Amino acid sequence: MPHLSLGVLGAAKIAEKSTLPAIVATPGIELTAIASRDASRASALVERFGGTAREEYEQIIDDPSIDAVYVPLPIGLHREWVGRALRAGKHVLCEKSLAGSYDAVRELVGLARERELVLFENFMCETHPQSLVVRETIANGGIGDLAHLSLSFGFPAFPADDQRNSRALQGGALNDAGAYCADMAVFYSSRLPVSVVATAQSRGAEVDQWGTAALTLESGVVAHLSYGFGLDYRNEARLWGETGRIEVDRAFSIPADRRPSVTVTRNTAATVLDIAAADQFRTQIERFVRTVRDGSGAVELDRRQAHGLLMECIRRSAWEDRSVRLSEHDDWDALATRMRAHHD
Image (cartoon, rainbow, N blue to C red; front, side):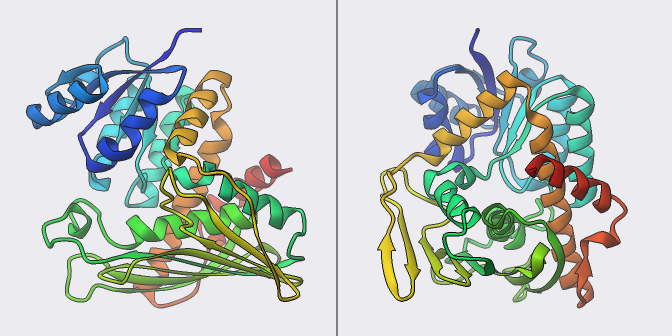
């Protein structure tokens, strides 16, 4: 079977540092082209990773030899460029968040569904062995019935002119760090959200700098999320059940050479799980290639739409200062029914 030909829209740091090395190391995918409005950046990346340099994103979108695109552009540009790629018949791996509003997420998911294309939001931590082991431990009753999750992700402040501080580019703590927490609460627990109570603090900036969200999940499980910019670095998950608890250090951003630190405690006896180090960007690229090859993208589309709706409910709760139920949105009942069917 021929390699999946991939083009890249943009020369972001995450692409240079993590995603491009994973792409060139993964069998079954070929880096064909990198486009950047800064021609020197594209040329420098091509020199390191291969492919050809393009000066315009359209040159990748319009190239019939390219099967898929990776989009590491600012969130505020995703709706346009992910949409254009899908309309051109290309599979898409997009950096998180997929979009800054549920309307945009629903539009992009709808395009992918109509054209039977794969659309991934790059939550690479879902594919790391430590995340899979934690979810399996919970599913198998390793800490009894799950009651509570606490997930925290935050970093020191970014420069004022960083894209993550731009309202026009749909930055902010929720769309960046908070998106990981919301995604992994659902991933770890294997339960759908029911309602949310959230807060947001801008601290005089254009976008939210700090935030919290209390999610009620199915079966009465509660997840507390905390996230922000301008904070001491924090990257952890704590999961509490009837008969034990799990502590995960580096739950979201996990260096490829770092051996996972996951501790399971039952009746005060702690066990550190033996989990191998892994490059979560490579495991994500491998999953993307498999999904394109086997045509199983429909499940991921429902997951991305459900996550987009949860994010919108978090925003709405913070804006309106009230508890918001996901069932307030007309899409939720049908979407949740499909999600439960996938899980079964």
